[in-house]
Structure formats: C-alpha cells, structure tokens
Length: 174
Image (cartoon, rainbow, N blue to C red; front, side):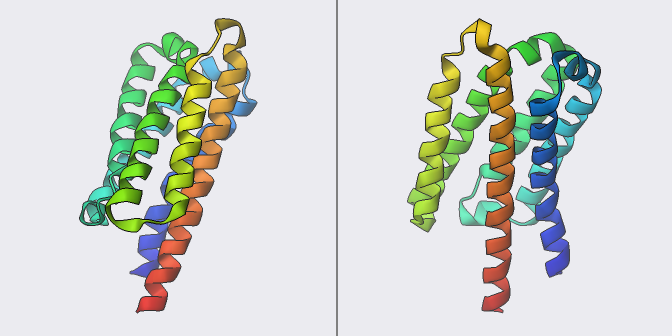
C-alpha cells in the first residue's frame, strides 16, 4: 500500500517537471509544434492532482492544493487546445493566477492545521513570484515564459520533497 501511495504522489511532480523542462528549453516554434503534447501534459497533471486529492482523502487534512492544481490544470488543458497561440502569449499571466491559487492554499494550510514555517515561506515565495509575473512587458514575454518553466520545476521539486517527507513520517508512525 505504501508503494502504491508513493507512486500516486510521484506522478504529479514528474509531469510538472517535464512541463517546466519543455517550457524552458523549447523555442517558440517547438512550443507551437508541441501544443497537443503540452495540453495532454496539463490534462494528465490535472487528472493526477484530482485523483490524488480524492483517493488520498486530502480534504480531511484541509489540504486543497491538489484540488486547486487539478482544476486549474484541466482549465489550462482545455484553453490551450482551443486557443494555443493566445495561451502561450498569456502564459506568464496564467502562471501568475496558478501561483496565486497555490500561494493561497499554502497560507490556508499554514493557518488551519500545520503551523509549519515551510508553508509560510513557500506562500511568500509564490506571492513574490506573482508580483514579478504580473507586470510582464510584452517585449520580455519570452523571458517570463522561461521563468514560468522554472516555477514549474521548483514546484515539482517542492511537491516531491514534501511527498517524500510525508511518506517517511507515515512509515515512522506505523
């Protein structure tokens, strides 16, 4: 059961890491040719987040990060399939909205049950990243798109470390 639990938690950070890697290292022509793959990765990540939220009963711990990430990723997948060119050009704004949801969830998690300073620190990092992305000059959109890829990679690493620490604490309690 523990291995199955860990594999469920491992899928989401891997998909986020892959999305961040593609966004960082792909040129605009490659990003356009990968539009179906990117939409599919957002769809997979959204489904994995929602699946984790409901199967691992995270709502009992007042943790709604996976629910928020799942719904937002499903919306990203749908919007990117319909209006891919607009999606790529507005990607920094979309990532700032995504980051706002994640930052608010970390604040909720900090204040409701955890009181762990790592949630507060990551909430402030998320909120600082939002402020940085919100004022995106159109001339620098490519740089901000690459920064969005770095955000996906850092979020995936955070989720991976957090999931490993949760698994270690569960095994030590049992």
